[in-house]
Image (cartoon, rainbow, N blue to C red; front, side, top):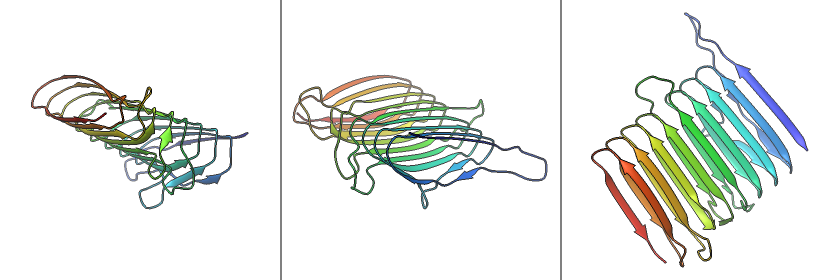
Length: 229
């Protein structure tokens, strides 16, 4: 088993800003990768140069603390456990499984927690795609956000792919699209929202096993739900 632990600290001085930039390309099974970034302008891959982790039976963990965090990764392979914890404002997270179509992303477990740092204007932007080209099976995505001005897009293609989203804050916009094989114990979307100015769009598809459970609170909701079986 490969086990990598990366811990970086940055500090803000009166005359300069220091940042962590990490770019990783890794291939092989049984990777255990822990990344900890603490400071301002943390970067783990970018939209133009994503971190690439390829292989089965993977454990991938990232913790970012600070403002203006960027995390962009293509994680491909079956039996992956992904745990992302971000605390701060202006966070940008992009996570793709099976972005090239070379690997299935079956038995995936994704858990993402984004928490504000007590400031206003948290501006979190999260984009998750599981089964981008090939459908996933037996995978689940859990996203929890605490803060304001949040945007989340979750697209999960595959059988038995439950998705859970919890957002607490205001001015939230998020879209969930779960489709692929249904029956039995197939599609499932669970949402919990607290705040104002919500704009939600949920799509689940079948055949059969399309389950949606939504609890929301606040003002000015615009909710569109489409289910097929």
